[in-house]
Length: 76
Image (cartoon, rainbow, N blue to C red; front, side, top):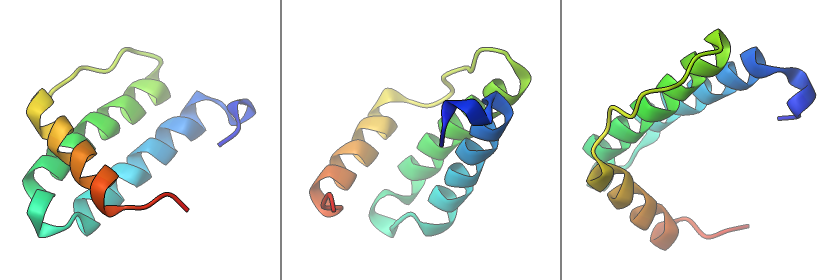
């Protein structure tokens, strides 16, 4: 996404990614991925409205998803 697209477009993109995380998260990290997706969704809402996001997830959830992705999703 280009910065020139604006905050509303970026926010919408964040919300799309969050929805996809919720839908496609593997069972091994489903609960934590939904928590992570909520953070991304909140960031998208904040971008669209020009406010600050809140961090409504446990840091352990974010860590578990990050570690799982780094081990199971090779960079292409």
